[in-house]
View 1 (cartoon, helix red, strand yellow):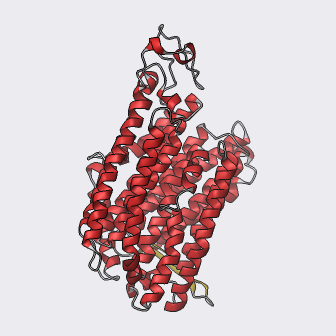
View 2 (cartoon, helix red, strand yellow):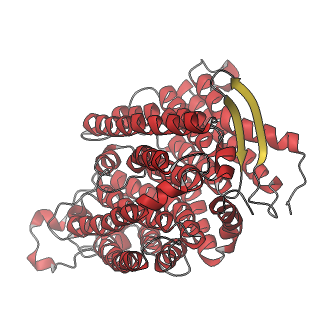
Length: 550
């Protein structure tokens, strides 16, 4: 069933356009704007160009989704297969199925919302032309990662996002941005070198780099020892990007230093590339190797869940001077731990849960980073002790709509039933209760129990954040110093307030509502109607785990 009947040739063009258009748009962004399109100044023209290009890509992605045959989500659609480097057997092979389509849509949506937000709130830094060009190159590389079906093309797309994200952090970031950018690039490049060796091993030993052919073969053309080596090598590179504990330490620094839109794209899109690689490459192509490492992957995953939550609790406590952006970054370590746990079960239930959690994390954490960026702009800091305030009112009293939306995103992140964060975590835990044949049920049920404990820790630190940031500390006014009674705010609009009442902040602006509402609405939609996503992923996952057989 398709919403709109679109011919295969048009579907091919749409997918190719989605991948290539941002790259062409990046080149165009660096050129001088035509006189009739400059508007008030060249900076405004290039920002409008970014919104236009990302908007066109989003529209094309939506049209592609409406033309997608939802009765056959396990079949590769909109495929293009052209010989590129015959000597190496490398082909320009593109296609989407029920696994990659949601990630394609998520990437197109988040990049458009970031471009729209930047049009009104450009981060301080060098030329806007360079900023928009880097965002568009980042989008092109990410979309290509989810669309290509050749191992070497996957590697090229996987690496394509590193340079733009490095410069976004290093040139438009905050304090310690250069150190954070170097840490990001070194970790990911070292992981990628090892990953390339594993991809080459698979291609040379099997005689093809075609991901569809390799998935259909289901590892039968590779010995167990080759699969084990390949999973170890490729898994390291993917684990760094995910990131998996203990290879996660670049993430909190990168998020803390990155500009708001950099954090949104890093959490909402780039982290998904690592987990997507586990599902698309390792599970179907090297199943015996995955079965060998699955218990270790699950162990690292649950350690990451608990570690991330404990780090967040430490940052959230009173007097810790914790940074709210850093806290959300550590929460990503925990949430991606659930994704890795679902993948490690090697069951349809667990993998579907992992894919659902991937999308939910992109929506919710993307919204959280937008909100934290807005709060930092208003207060001039993301320090939790400062944000908690000393008047007992905090966000609910100063910017009630902003406080309400932050509370909504927080409870969605902790997995409240009825919101998107619930289903992914629940399904991964169900998958761990009954893992694939050959995996220890006792071990995985232990992992399930640890993961369930992690959900309680997640709820604890998220509720502490809501209480402190949205409600304040409720310190008696008589115990406050004169400085604490009149906190200095970075964006105080100067509205008169009654004696003793908290200074007012600018509440949600129109452009902020436009950028954030789609994420909040989709978080509710996915929570109330999970079948809209699971109906796409489940048949594709079943086929993937069955060795290309529906």
